[in-house]
Image 1: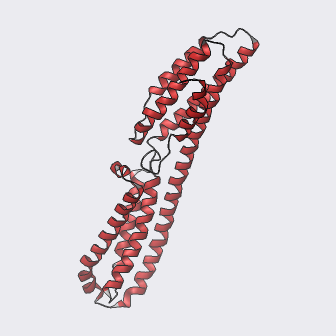
Image 2: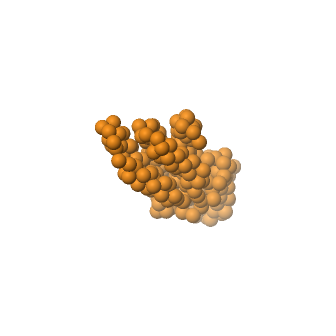
Image 3: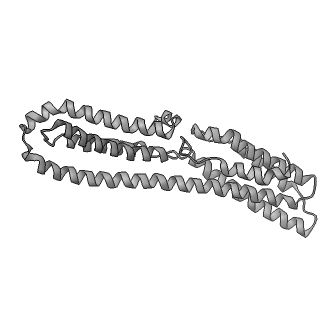
Amino acid sequence: MTFYWIYDLSNWALCTLIVGTFLGLSVAGLFMSRPAARRFLQSSPRHNDIVGYFFAGIGVFYGLALGLIAVATWDDYTQIDGVVTTEAAAVARLYRDLDGYPQPFRERFERIMREYARLVIDREWPAHKRGVALEDGDFLLDHLENEVMSFEPASEREKIVQAEVVRSLDTVLEQRRLRLQAVTTGLPAALWSVVLFGALLNVGISYLFWIENVGLHAALVAIMAAFIGLLVFLTAAMDNPFRGEFSVSSQAFQTIFDNVMCQGGT
């Protein structure tokens, strides 16, 4: 799907757009198809029972499919949010582990980690919101790794510190890889096609009911279209976890920078 511009809208605007589009097109389709339905159904409600059976069956399957898709998008969102939180915690642990190094190594290593945190917050996260995974942070972590590996421990204590730092750095690198891979996470176009085509089928079948009161018929179609629109909005808002107003934020990194790293200087 290439409709990423919708994530530039607020949640209220996006909800209004999606629900309004479903509602407007559905009601317009009802009035456009009603003359043909009148001829086809001969202005008689005697087929409503048969149409109702098909409508109920397709509606149940569509509701289940849409519900499962919505649950899957929420699961993806929570998993990616957990990856970001774990990465931020690993960065904090690594920064604290650097306290065990003697000067000037400690100051140099901590400066690299502060640069990394600011890079993630100021450059990588805005890029994530555009669906781009920057690799700039990799160079800083590679530089830190080279610096750490070039350090020669002179005591048993420094050997322990070195081992802990290498372990923490590996965790940061692992979680970073998972975060970057998740930047482009989203429902495939095939699933979105099922969602939209299923909505079209459900609304289309509702046109086959014959109700003499056209206002009542339009109201029922509008209610169903609005409900489908709300479910589609919920799925779209949670899809692409780094995009839109409802997205994974960099607050975990900002908290680590403010509460942990700023204590060591800026």
